[in-house]
Length: 296
Ligand SMILES: N[C@@H](CCC[C@H](N)C(=O)O)C(=O)O
Image (cartoon, rainbow, N blue to C red):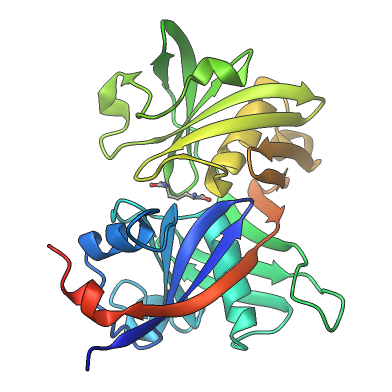
């Protein structure tokens, strides 16, 4: 009899994930299996996959086991590995709560981008857990020199922001100018992002309030990107002449994404906090025989 592997499905502002709980790191998940599971027609469907492993059981996280019991082994929908996923880490925390591994309050989660401090807000007792989840996302790096992003005959300068993973943030007059985003927006010079990039198009909505569309590396256009929203908030603050590290006053931006709204605060020490929802929507079983017999 072939193995049956448990999975769950969850999303954060409609950035959706297949969740594979695998505490002892016993499930083989090569890129082709991840891509098949994330396929929206022939698989379960998701922008990415959250492989839930005890830090002590994963070679990339063993050194973090004393600080964080659980490791988010994040994969993009095309099977590639990414350093961080901001919406993913909230959904990961919601899964830990759902499974009874943690309760409301504070939990540390190991990622390839370091250990993230997560706070799960209280929800009214009796119902499903729906309170917001806040993640300490670390500091943004803004290397000098950006790129030019082009779509449909228009070009924009884009700011290079690293949130553990790479982002190019372009301010546009109208989000429709980003086009259909069926393919990755071309940028130059290519040498700025040798490992590819997540591209955010941003339009103003009001004071300290912006909206974005994103083309994610390894996933295509998604309904939200948490690291992208943080990159956008920092790029918008600098454009607006605001830097909490200089003023000593925290700054908060509301970032609308196609799948909802995220709240991003940059503190005087440069640390960024992201708050938003995270929902578990389904649980099921993956047919091991199907997974084992996929073409590799
Ligand atoms: N959706 C994520 C980002 C996932 C990783 C990204 N596609 C990359 O390759 O860097 C988020 O919420 O941050």
